[in-house]
Image (tube, rainbow, N blue to C red):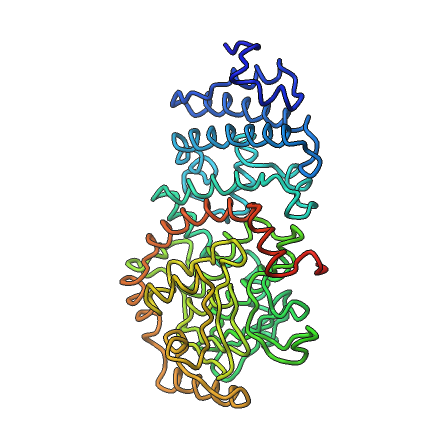
Length: 468
């Protein structure tokens, strides 16, 4: 039992004005792992519940005194250490319960929601997320970090992690309905993307005109669905990814590939942590690996994917997430005045799977310079051509694209899927991706809520003066 007067444990909470009895009850939840899932879930949930009650007694983050901020940090740290301990012992049991012993596939956003109900306090529930999500990023407590700890543990477990990767490679739940519409109409308009046919190619056009085709919560599902439908389309042999013309005053009327993550939305708290995981395990990984089938493993050995070659067309620039997309494509055509950057250093986040993939194109040193020091790569340079396969004048890009499409499809693409799998198995088999994402899921969660992110956005993006 905790001694209420033990100043070595309670001093920080005393200074914050938290009641000693509640603090003592919280410390009495020692969080020892017994190995029994039900018993451990009950015991740890009690600790997390009392910790949440203590947090509720503190003012919101912007109004806390130094003592109250220290108490909040101590509550979060102890709660997260307990989550790591619980998940270290029980992640497989929990995942199997959530998926009916691997019989059901659940996308990561649904999996996390079900985990909140199965083990209260392990990850935030809907009510907590609603309260947090209305706040600007700097005022959030970062409760979504707990989602990151859970997802990281799932991915670190070989069986559970591969099952989750499989789930995220299945067609989006709305993709089949939109595929029927596209087959009938030959065109599709979604939030964030449009889909049309260009000869033997399915053309996905990214659209976020006000924010120079940046990616955010409003674009992610639409773009993923468009990629799914393009991949499944039987009337085309290859697919193309390009950016639309934009409305931003600086570039009005120009086509641009992508400005990456919407930094304005990020600063104002409008991008969730799970957005990163959904994007890289869903949208981006589908570009790289194709779509999975529920009855076959999507790993390269089983060959259980539906896929076609992807061509990227870079107008203007491919910044951040835009550059990440290029690393998942099979062929990149770029305008001679276009450039690429991965400004992770100026943002304070991890640039998706670029850390896993960029060095394969550029070598280790240039990759580190781009990721850690913000090096710009102009497309029409020796370094840029390590990523870009073909360069054309900006006003000749459409004609060059038609030639590339003809070049890919002129002799058929019957071997394309097999060759893509054969390349991947040597470069980045699915299990390698799983292991990378286990690290990414945890590290990105902490980066997303770091004070350094806010400082970087204000210093490098003038974010506090931009309207969401």
